[in-house]
Amino acid sequence: MPIGHPKSQIRTRGFNHESMNFKGMDIVSIRDLSQEQIEHVLEYSEKMIPYARGDAGMKPLDGKILATLFFEPSTRTRMSFESAMMRLGGSITDLGIPSMSSISKGESLADTIRMVEVYSDIIVIRHPREGAARLAARFSSKPVINAGDGAGQHPTQTLLDLFTIKRIKKDFDKLKVVMVGDLKYGRTAHSLAEALASFGVELTFVAPSTLQMPKETVKQVEKAGCKPKLTNHLEETIADADVLYVTRIQKERFPDLAEYQKVAGTYRVDRKLLREAKSDLIVMHPLPRVDEIDPEVDTTQHAKYFEQAFNGVPVRMALLNLVLGGEL
Amino acid sequence: MREFKVTPIRNGTVIDHIDCGMALKVLRIIGMRNGSNVQSPVSVLMHVPSHKDGWKDVVKVEDRELDPREVDKIALIAPKATINIIREFNVAEKYNVKMPERVVGKARCSNPNCITNQNEPVEPEFVVESKNPPVLRCIYCDRQVDDIAENLL
Image 1 (cartoon, rainbow over the protein chains, first blue to last red):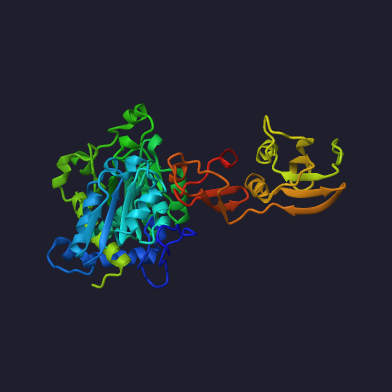
Image 2 (cartoon, each protein chain N blue to C red):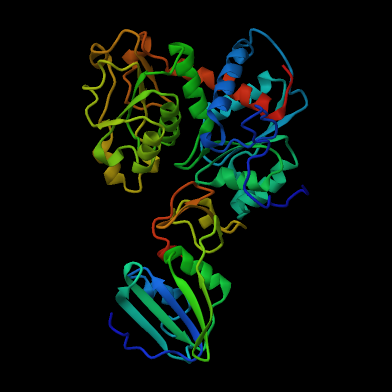
């Protein structure tokens, strides 16, 4: 395809449910991946662990360049993508702070992408507007990975969440997963719920009624054969939970500050709450946390959120290597 | 069934089997708004009996045949509508509107934070999830369009 020409139709390059060929594929939504492909990514991520830790070295992506375009602040996602690329022997070029670049001069995202794609082999994008990554994928002949588009999708977070659960619990079947916090605006919550439902877990959604899981997501979860419980009482759900997935109530997603103040601090996971929990309950959080998990939980056997943050590296290494066709 | 008290038209278009209550939105699609330069009569029948569906709306536009883009838009809000082209009091052509698999450039995404509502060089594009009732999903932000009639371009 000539440089700078939009693809005529939205499609996922190299998308092939039958063969596990990820080369050249865009990863914009978790729905771009079949269940088999998700399982393959999780298995492949496991192989990446020693390299992600720096215990072993390899350079399958030597000479390849990852372009990072973060139009919104990010710490974990950005650093783990960068770390993943470097662990694979590749290099990084960064857009920099949008206010300091051509974006501040009014350049369209489409034009930015046309420029960035000629400088790199793969693009990772985070953007405040929903659909931005899909648009980027349309204008780029290089693969695009979505690192979060507004309140939309964040597929690599979903994959690393699934990976964390699988690593610790070994199997998804019949696991009882409780998701708590901002389930309305939290972009990680929707795609994780849908993915977990397709793996046969039992889901409970705990949120104030104004922040409960959107009907559309509940419908998707039900379509996958799961009948989720919806409640606003966290205490009632903790006793038989296997996984407690906590999300931050995100101030930046509220159109109205007064609405935020009404619900901020509704739930707090602390040692007292966890006294009622099973000994092997795991507590997860996509981070950053504010006050929804008491720091006293960090030293309990339940706390897995820092391990979860580390898992971003092997999972993103797996995706980068699969999409760029690196040899292991 | 009672006869409609609207005279047959000599030349023009009869849009029949419009979903009840949608006639005024059909008028908007075909450009009948305040201040439009309409030189021929337009008749609107609302909530009239239908053999097929109980009740329907009908719009008759004299001396005008619709262009395909207008017909495609009518399909999005009145998926059961039929278009009758009238020439010299006879039905010269009759066809049902057709809901496509994809809708490109005919409606905007109702999500104000969708990238297609910014200054980007793309036409809004939707997958048709259901033809009747029409349900469109934005291929960019993955949201369903809330009110198609209000978001037609």
